[in-house]
Length: 204
Image (cartoon, rainbow, N blue to C red; front, side):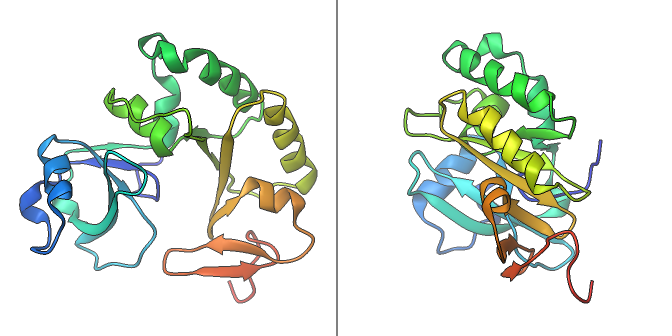
């Protein structure tokens, strides 16, 4: 498995003492529970990594930095695919259906967002309003026909699913790529840019 630190990976080891002095109280409270933080896209100094901290509701999110040397555990989205879903009976049926579709694609994939957080921690973070957030590692060009096929297969499940493609240059939405007739939004490490083909950037 690729052990490189990448967006959406979960990291353990950050403590309240590492927060800026002006951080909201709820952030320190969450870290005191020894919950993981999630890697976000942002440029940083080599000794730190940009991370986000989840609160108890969707509106509570806090962006900060974590010292790389403080990392005690690192889990990638695709590692969560191996989770025993029997331990999550309220999610089991839906995720088993999702897994059947995703495994047929033949590309590395995993869970992110509230679903990934709950599978990694056992804390109830998925609500009725939550999407099932998925990540597909697409190192090589995914043809739009394949992207449309994946969307069609997932649509049949009648679930709220959001899929991101992680390309070598950054992240794109699967749905946007499948439907795009022109430029598409590519989330890079330091900015979001419009491109025609995320796998073939001009000047890259």
